[in-house]
Length: 419
Image (cartoon, rainbow, N blue to C red; front, side, top):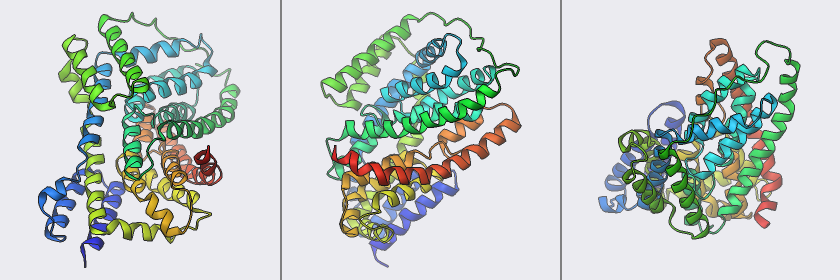
């Protein structure tokens, strides 16, 4: 058995284990890359190490550290609290506020997972007081956070744009973000319009009035400094085109020097496991490219589709895998590098449209309870019966979104790619 076959089997094993176990597949992927690269492919250790994405690692670490500082000193919680109070007591506006707040915070840099972890416990309590369905609250927070997940400044957006650049699809950062936002906004608005009828039917139930929120605490000096530094960082990244990750390290260092946040507390909040997952899988993907395993992988994928159906098929396949696996840590780093080879082997198609289909198809299902976002939403419901009910609802929803995402990408991704 040659190195190409062995490396491809290792990738498939890593994907399966990411679905069926709690093992960090990034660590497993690095171990596989070393064993196969050195002892099967005959590569030197430094050739295997060369596959580690040091630039991506620094970018993810810098962005997540900056927003860990903002979380540790209460800045993000204060912003979320004030946004909720902006509804003026209209409970049916709360889901829209949840969506917009999650979108804004996620777009600014942290990405979906930390923002859902921050917002959904508060949103579930407020939603319960207002008589809103936990299902509606979970969808609006989850889709809001995911809508901003591929902004050029977010951690996951960095992953996507880096992988697309490596695939020869550079310069589409805003198109990637806006298509991602449009798809999630469309689903969220349709969901809101349908589920809000449920809320209106329960107007007279106990607790269905305006939620009783305490006054927002004053913004502290540390929080004001944090907001100002992050605002300057966003302006510099968007308009001056400075490096996202290195600038984030500079901004984080400035906040630490100014004593705006506790460095030790923030470091504990940096999602090192997710960063290692993304980078570890990238090391294994780099080995596949060196051994010819990636060519085998794209050949297998190509057998599932034709030039006409490619966008829908790839969205459906990545959506099914993402229902049970990590979108940012496994699915995107695995599938985005295959885009050009996949189009060539199928015999036609637009590589950009295929990449856009992978992004949206894999993310619309992220609210499923076996993924991180869905699990956070289920865990935020204190009542055991309601929690089990929400689990079933989100599971069915996630599976349905694999089909919806495939249809959406089949119809619209080529149009977006040509804009």
